[in-house]
Image (cartoon, one colour):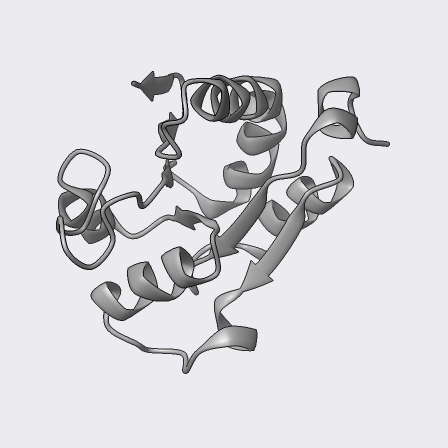
Length: 137
C-alpha cells in the first residue's frame, strides 16, 4: 500500500545489477517507478555507463556497488556528463537486509526527494547502512 507522501510524488529509480529485486519491489509497493538495469542496458556494463543510463532515464540510481559512491563525487559523475545524478547507496553486510532497510528508509527518501524538488536541486544522495541512514544535501 503506497504511503501518503507517495501519492503526492512519484520517484523513478534505476536499480544497478547488484541490487536485489526485493529493493525494487519496495519502491514499487510505495508507488514508485522502477527500472531494472537488465531491462535497460547490457548487464556487466561499466559503472559510468550505468550512471549515464540512470541520468538519461531521469532516475535516481540505486546501487550496492562500492565503486559507485566514488563515481558520484558529491552528486555527479562529472560536470559535463551527469551533473545532476542522484544516488541511493545501499551498504549492508548481507543483501538480505537491503529490502527491509529500504522499506525503513522510504519516508526519508521520499522527503528528501520532495525537498530537493522544492529547492529545484534534482540531486539526491542517501546512504543506507545496517545501522545508519544518512542523507547529504
